[in-house]
Image 1 (cartoon, rainbow, N blue to C red):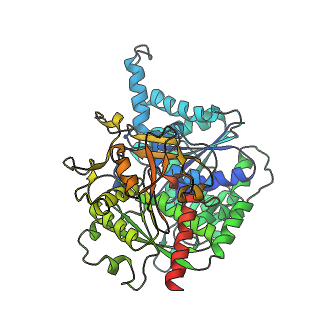
Image 2 (image 1 turned 90 degrees about the vertical axis):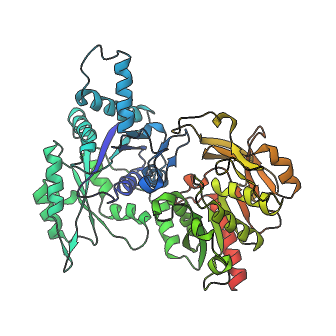
Image 3 (image 1 turned 180 degrees about the vertical axis):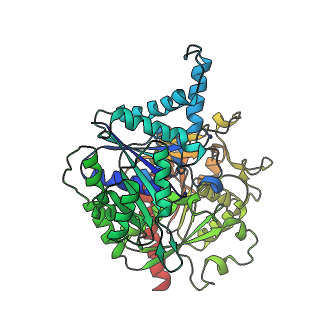
Amino acid sequence: MNKFIFVSGGVCSSLGKGVSASSLGALLEGRGFNVRMVKCDPYINVDAGTMSPYQHGEVYVTDDGAETDLDLGNYARFTSGPLSHANSITTGQIYDAVIRKEREGRYLGRTIQVIPHITDEIKRRILAVAKESPDNDVVIVEIGGTVGDIESIPFLEAARQMIHELGRNNSISVHLTLIPEVAGSELKTKPTQHSVKAMQELGIQPDVLICRSPVMLDEATRRKIALFTNVENEAVIVSYDVNTTIYQVPLVFYEQKLDQIVLKKMGVEARHADLSAWYLMMDKFNTRDGKVRVGVVGKYMELHDAYKSVYEALFHAGLACGVVMDIVKIDSAQLENASDLDAVLGGGCNSPLDGILIPGGFGERGIDGMTRAAAWARTRKVPYFGICLGMQVMVIEWARNVLGWENADSTEFSHDTTHPVISLLEDQIDVQMMGGTMRLGNSESRAREGTLLKAAYGETAIHERHRHRYEFSNKYRTDMINSGLIISAFTPDDSLVESVEWPDHPWGVGVQFHPEFKSKPTAAHPLFTAFVKALIKNSAENHG
């Protein structure tokens, strides 16, 4: 059984197509179906790897090293199907593939056009995901952008063709629209009507409507929407604002029988639904007791999505530990000239931080502020978690303040440093192309006995995803170890340092990889859980 669900959006962007598509996937998995998720991004970039976090939020990395849109992170957190290069399709990839085939003469001299050549390549890639495994049941395809965007038209046309070719029992359209609230708390359905009309003009009749609304719609409003859009009453689903967490959305949809409606339209018998993990997660959310404050010190604090997976992983760990996570966003550049860090981070303020986390990032801006934050956490015995760049900052700070190498640095930030404790990987030295050329994807590390890292994972072999060009310089490995810095993980051949820890410190851990990519609301990542436990202990000691 190969069934396809195309999820599109209208009226405006940022309505939550990714969360809606992921929630539907979670419901279908709860009924025992194998679900695969695909994101079609209309941008001409080949992938998200070279895009600024200010432009597009974080880059989510898959096991096979694909640098993708952050919506794949939602897919990973809500569903369990594997994600790879195949699950992220961009306009850039499609045109690149078609042009390469044309240059190879594979079109036998034909004129290359959007229809059929571009749309055929889109369909080929979507069908390839379905054929990856004979066990795949349903492929949910999220089409980025909104109906009416020029960039999205080829993907919507490919969806129209597949719905026509495969038949309504094998492929359906789910359309997400906005129900805005105007003065006097009046809800307006006209934008939804126009959005569906735009879909119909492209040849697609939505089978299911998901209406983003500040409140639950009454039955009369839903009937009105159904009447004007040719959608059945029961297939008008409301995605109203939840005052809890986005992870309640699958249960909101379940209460409105979205999964049963979708399966019925595809001619599939609905199996028993097991959503116990989601209900248990919500029980944990509602029974949290206490709060811990963690300062996230980074470069891109203006945009929440720039560190989305980190924030989500902290939230998951808070659920697992039964506490509310109070995340304080701190721009590292503002710490560079702060005269009194205690006034910003510690006991000198009304609500001191219980710990510091420094996530990944690129470029020189704000590095000295991060280094000062790391030094503050180390000397004050405050729990610290460094991820990728955050680990490199630990090493730089240790070299400067413990070994006394005042100008120790990374060659990413200073080519003239006399102590380049962080430097380029050997295979990166002559790289000129920036896209897709870093150390990317899943890699094995070996944790050393007696370390906080080993205690957190409970095992020696660790498999996590990487995204970086620079590494701990082996030239300084002996000096670092002799001065007391703990190297807690290496690659299996001992050639690369993967994690460091501070000695005589309650919890100071830095890792070169990105554990946040593997955290789920129903299964918090063990390293984040260990960090939050350290925050709880520190908070109890400081506040009684």
